[in-house]
Amino acid sequence: MSAELVNLRQVRKDKRRSDKEKQAEQNRLTFGRTKVERSLTQARNELTEKTLDQGKLEKPFRDKD
View 1 (cartoon, rainbow, N blue to C red):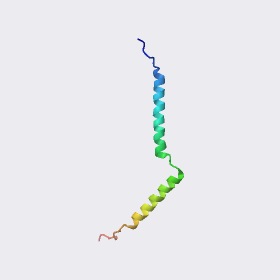
View 2 (tube, rainbow, N blue to C red):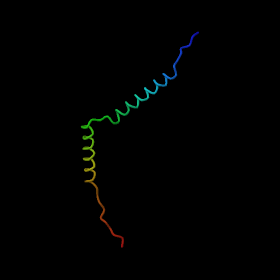
View 3 (cartoon, rainbow, N blue to C red):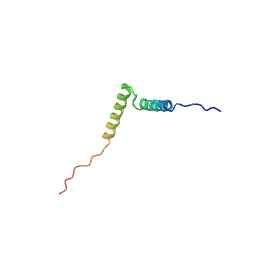
């Protein structure tokens, strides 16, 4: 009846490495866009804003007298 010996220091290191890899993968998904993708998104946002602003009805300024 022999138990398997476990080096706790090594287990902690392995866990930290896997946690860092998970975080790196998440960052790649979140921030890893090409310059073309970023500029396309910016252009679409500007076009949407411009279209939205064109449909606004502005109320005339009324002075409180």
